[in-house]
Picture 1 (tube, rainbow, N blue to C red):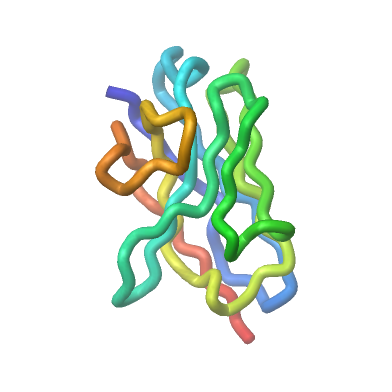
Picture 2: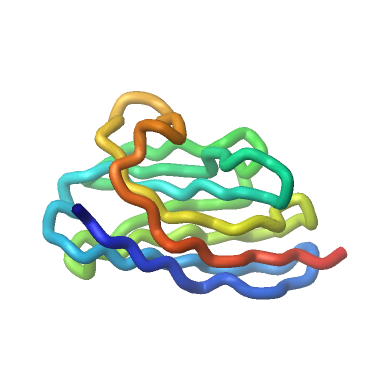
Length: 124
């Protein structure tokens, strides 16, 4: 099973930027769809973005389109989430994930492995 370690979270003011990184433990990373979910206090974990194994297809949640970008570096087993124009409602724990779903947005139940989560807090 792929092990994932997310990093890069922190406290930022509204309008600011952060870049999250996720490191994967295995070579199978390079053939898997990778993504990010987030969970705010009292809410369900929700999809944010994902990227196909070769980077030629991405999905983004409507709430982050135009502000967030997902990318990957298969040579380094890394996936990134660049978050710009952050809003207080983006405050959540962000989880890196790997899924076998490649042709649509995955549900929470279609995740093979989860990272440990990294906290993002956006102050107003």
